[in-house]
Length: 176
Image 1: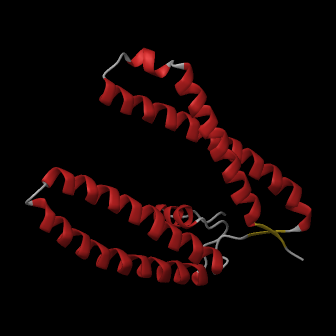
Image 2 (image 1 turned 90 degrees about the vertical axis):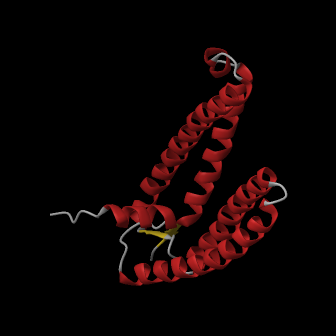
């Protein structure tokens, strides 16, 4: 009988890029990384909100846009970079494969890269269409069928799929 993972375990494994079983060691390391990231975010948010409140009286709109941009930058690049580097250094993301299963694992990585590239292209196409629809207020059908938008979405999906293939491929380690 298979043990079913609860939703929180699936989310943790997905967010931190862990494949395989989330054992006690990995869970404790993930909790340590999460606690460090929380402490960084806590002090950053205190400082950022204080500075935004200072500038909100003179220029509230500009203060809001700057706060949103800096928050996105901090969360994506600083916190995201920390999580990626920390999980990589602790070897939480490595996927150890027996030599007899290595060919099948490489094939699976190729299909995952293709699927992630297609998902990114479709999501990027629809999101950019919605953004253009809101900002430019053109016809939905004209925007979604624009050849330039389709080509850019497919190009972005191709690049993202290749990047994800190389990331997933670098995580495969052959066991002895």
